[in-house]
Image (cartoon, rainbow, N blue to C red; front, side, top):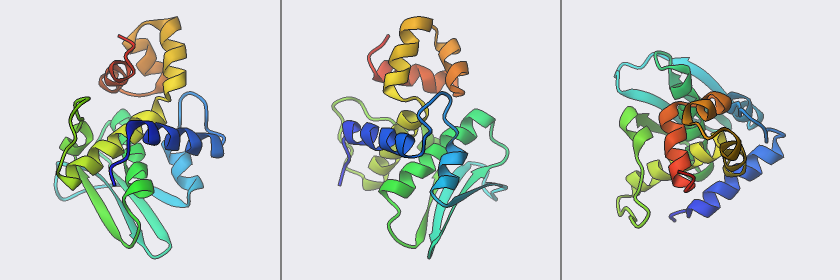
Length: 170
């Protein structure tokens, strides 16, 4: 089942509101912990690994590459939360490489590859979680600066630039 952008945005907003985290900036570690998910830094044997989410019975863990910058880790954690909520229904894991965190779809593109589509959904969820559309619109009308917005939301300028474009605020 492919999730629409609107459904992903709504799920992120519901998660934020249900956990009293509907502010700026969002702390994805706090959200994960409130869902009973342990978040840890990891040293991966493969340098291109960014993170993973794993379920073993009732235990769910998110691992992030300890060598990554703080902005990258925040996005990776939010991305893995998306996988947890949408794609990880039973025991197993989803492992993400750096390239997965940059997967986007054009407005009219519908990927046929299930794995690619899951990465796009997880990225959309991470963006919606860390950069809530309502807050981004409100702050953009005031700040009109990608770098100022990135600092306010504690995300990379690249992520904020993509989000502003996706929301049609350019």
